Length: 199
Image (tube, rainbow, N blue to C red; front, side):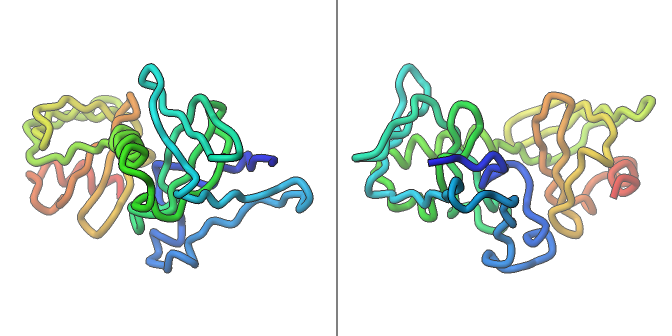
Protein backbone atom coordinates (compact mmCIF):
# COMPACT_ATOMS: atom_id res chain seq x y z
CA UNK A 1 0.00 0.00 0.00
CA UNK A 2 1.19 3.48 -0.79
CA UNK A 3 0.61 6.14 1.80
CA UNK A 4 -0.86 9.56 1.21
CA UNK A 5 1.68 12.25 2.00
CA UNK A 6 -1.18 14.74 2.35
CA UNK A 7 -2.32 13.15 5.63
CA UNK A 8 -5.93 12.26 6.24
CA UNK A 9 -5.89 14.01 9.62
CA UNK A 10 -3.98 17.15 10.39
CA UNK A 11 -4.91 17.02 14.04
CA UNK A 12 -5.03 20.57 15.35
CA UNK A 13 -7.31 22.65 13.16
CA UNK A 14 -10.82 22.43 11.80
CA UNK A 15 -11.42 22.06 8.09
CA UNK A 16 -12.81 24.99 6.15
CA UNK A 17 -16.22 23.33 5.85
CA UNK A 18 -16.35 22.76 9.60
CA UNK A 19 -15.73 26.43 10.28
CA UNK A 20 -18.55 27.36 7.88
CA UNK A 21 -21.04 24.99 9.48
CA UNK A 22 -20.97 22.34 6.72
CA UNK A 23 -21.95 18.73 7.28
CA UNK A 24 -19.45 15.98 8.01
CA UNK A 25 -19.76 14.72 4.43
CA UNK A 26 -19.21 18.22 3.09
CA UNK A 27 -16.21 18.75 5.34
CA UNK A 28 -14.23 15.68 4.24
CA UNK A 29 -11.09 17.33 2.85
CA UNK A 30 -10.32 16.93 -0.81
CA UNK A 31 -7.36 14.65 -1.38
CA UNK A 32 -4.49 15.85 -3.55
CA UNK A 33 -4.22 14.45 -7.09
CA UNK A 34 -2.72 10.97 -7.02
CA UNK A 35 -2.03 8.11 -9.35
CA UNK A 36 -5.08 5.85 -8.88
CA UNK A 37 -2.90 2.78 -9.28
CA UNK A 38 -0.61 3.71 -6.40
CA UNK A 39 -2.94 5.51 -3.98
CA UNK A 40 -5.15 3.70 -1.51
CA UNK A 41 -7.12 5.15 1.40
CA UNK A 42 -7.17 2.45 4.04
CA UNK A 43 -10.32 2.30 6.16
CA UNK A 44 -9.31 0.58 9.38
CA UNK A 45 -11.42 -2.25 10.79
CA UNK A 46 -11.60 -1.84 14.59
CA UNK A 47 -12.13 -5.59 15.02
CA UNK A 48 -8.76 -6.30 13.41
CA UNK A 49 -6.83 -3.55 15.23
CA UNK A 50 -4.79 -3.72 18.39
CA UNK A 51 -3.24 -0.51 19.76
CA UNK A 52 -0.84 -1.01 22.65
CA UNK A 53 2.34 0.37 24.20
CA UNK A 54 5.88 -0.92 24.30
CA UNK A 55 8.19 1.08 26.58
CA UNK A 56 5.57 3.83 26.56
CA UNK A 57 5.47 4.11 22.76
CA UNK A 58 2.09 3.46 21.07
CA UNK A 59 2.10 0.69 18.47
CA UNK A 60 -0.49 -0.60 16.05
CA UNK A 61 -1.02 -4.13 14.75
CA UNK A 62 -3.56 -5.07 12.09
CA UNK A 63 -4.35 -8.76 12.35
CA UNK A 64 -3.23 -10.79 9.33
CA UNK A 65 -1.56 -7.69 7.88
CA UNK A 66 1.30 -5.80 9.54
CA UNK A 67 2.50 -3.82 12.56
CA UNK A 68 3.83 -0.32 13.09
CA UNK A 69 6.30 0.17 15.94
CA UNK A 70 5.37 3.82 16.45
CA UNK A 71 2.07 5.53 15.67
CA UNK A 72 0.28 8.77 16.41
CA UNK A 73 -3.43 9.51 16.38
CA UNK A 74 -5.18 12.67 15.17
CA UNK A 75 -8.78 13.73 14.76
CA UNK A 76 -9.89 14.43 11.20
CA UNK A 77 -12.64 16.77 12.50
CA UNK A 78 -11.50 17.93 15.95
CA UNK A 79 -14.27 20.50 16.39
CA UNK A 80 -17.37 19.20 14.63
CA UNK A 81 -16.98 15.46 15.25
CA UNK A 82 -14.21 14.74 17.78
CA UNK A 83 -15.51 11.24 18.60
CA UNK A 84 -15.22 9.78 15.10
CA UNK A 85 -12.85 9.72 12.11
CA UNK A 86 -9.42 9.20 13.67
CA UNK A 87 -6.37 9.20 11.46
CA UNK A 88 -3.45 6.92 12.38
CA UNK A 89 0.01 7.97 11.23
CA UNK A 90 3.32 6.13 11.29
CA UNK A 91 6.58 7.32 12.84
CA UNK A 92 7.30 9.43 9.74
CA UNK A 93 3.93 11.17 9.92
CA UNK A 94 2.52 9.30 6.91
CA UNK A 95 -1.02 8.00 6.81
CA UNK A 96 -1.73 4.44 7.89
CA UNK A 97 -5.48 4.72 7.66
CA UNK A 98 -8.73 6.16 8.94
CA UNK A 99 -10.86 4.71 11.76
CA UNK A 100 -14.50 5.74 11.73
CA UNK A 101 -15.61 4.73 15.24
CA UNK A 102 -13.00 4.27 18.01
CA UNK A 103 -15.80 3.11 20.31
CA UNK A 104 -15.63 -0.27 18.56
CA UNK A 105 -12.02 -0.91 19.60
CA UNK A 106 -11.20 -3.39 22.34
CA UNK A 107 -10.92 -1.75 25.81
CA UNK A 108 -7.09 -1.73 25.94
CA UNK A 109 -6.76 -0.22 22.47
CA UNK A 110 -9.43 2.36 23.23
CA UNK A 111 -7.62 3.43 26.39
CA UNK A 112 -4.32 3.92 24.55
CA UNK A 113 -6.08 5.90 21.80
CA UNK A 114 -7.92 8.06 24.34
CA UNK A 115 -4.66 8.76 26.21
CA UNK A 116 -2.91 9.79 22.98
CA UNK A 117 -5.77 12.10 22.01
CA UNK A 118 -5.80 13.65 25.48
CA UNK A 119 -2.10 14.49 25.15
CA UNK A 120 -2.46 15.81 21.62
CA UNK A 121 -5.52 17.94 22.27
CA UNK A 122 -4.83 19.05 25.83
CA UNK A 123 -6.31 22.57 26.00
CA UNK A 124 -6.56 24.27 29.42
CA UNK A 125 -9.60 26.54 29.76
CA UNK A 126 -8.85 30.09 30.90
CA UNK A 127 -11.14 30.97 33.79
CA UNK A 128 -9.67 34.34 34.73
CA UNK A 129 -7.05 36.74 33.39
CA UNK A 130 -4.79 38.01 36.15
CA UNK A 131 -2.75 40.34 33.95
CA UNK A 132 -1.99 41.04 30.32
CA UNK A 133 0.85 43.09 28.84
CA UNK A 134 1.81 43.93 25.25
CA UNK A 135 5.41 44.60 24.20
CA UNK A 136 6.55 44.90 20.57
CA UNK A 137 3.85 42.61 19.21
CA UNK A 138 4.21 40.01 21.96
CA UNK A 139 1.41 39.42 24.48
CA UNK A 140 2.23 38.28 28.00
CA UNK A 141 -0.71 36.74 29.87
CA UNK A 142 -0.94 35.57 33.44
CA UNK A 143 -4.09 33.49 33.77
CA UNK A 144 -5.93 31.06 35.96
CA UNK A 145 -7.06 27.94 34.11
CA UNK A 146 -8.93 24.79 35.03
CA UNK A 147 -5.44 23.24 35.37
CA UNK A 148 -3.94 25.94 37.58
CA UNK A 149 -2.16 29.26 37.05
CA UNK A 150 -0.25 29.67 33.78
CA UNK A 151 1.91 32.28 32.13
CA UNK A 152 1.30 32.52 28.39
CA UNK A 153 3.50 34.25 25.82
CA UNK A 154 1.98 34.79 22.38
CA UNK A 155 3.68 36.40 19.38
CA UNK A 156 1.68 37.66 16.41
CA UNK A 157 -1.66 37.08 18.11
CA UNK A 158 -3.57 37.41 14.84
CA UNK A 159 -1.73 34.36 13.47
CA UNK A 160 -2.08 32.36 16.69
CA UNK A 161 -5.75 32.90 17.48
CA UNK A 162 -8.52 30.60 16.32
CA UNK A 163 -12.12 31.76 16.56
CA UNK A 164 -14.43 28.83 17.41
CA UNK A 165 -17.61 30.84 17.96
CA UNK A 166 -18.73 34.45 18.36
CA UNK A 167 -16.98 34.80 21.72
CA UNK A 168 -14.99 31.56 22.07
CA UNK A 169 -11.35 31.49 20.98
CA UNK A 170 -8.23 29.38 21.29
CA UNK A 171 -4.77 30.95 21.35
CA UNK A 172 -1.46 29.19 20.77
CA UNK A 173 1.63 30.24 22.72
CA UNK A 174 5.26 30.33 21.61
CA UNK A 175 5.75 26.69 22.67
CA UNK A 176 2.76 25.42 20.70
CA UNK A 177 0.51 25.01 23.75
CA UNK A 178 -3.14 25.94 23.23
CA UNK A 179 -5.45 27.72 25.67
CA UNK A 180 -9.19 28.18 25.35
CA UNK A 181 -10.99 31.41 26.24
CA UNK A 182 -14.58 30.12 26.45
CA UNK A 183 -16.26 33.55 26.55
CA UNK A 184 -14.27 36.63 25.59
CA UNK A 185 -17.20 38.85 26.61
CA UNK A 186 -16.63 37.90 30.24
CA UNK A 187 -12.99 39.03 30.30
CA UNK A 188 -11.83 42.34 31.72
CA UNK A 189 -11.84 45.28 29.31
CA UNK A 190 -8.10 45.26 28.60
CA UNK A 191 -8.04 41.55 27.83
CA UNK A 192 -11.08 41.88 25.59
CA UNK A 193 -9.43 44.72 23.71
CA UNK A 194 -6.26 42.68 23.07
CA UNK A 195 -8.22 39.74 21.68
CA UNK A 196 -10.80 41.73 19.72
CA UNK A 197 -8.04 43.60 17.84
CA UNK A 198 -6.83 40.26 16.52
CA UNK A 199 -10.25 39.04 15.33
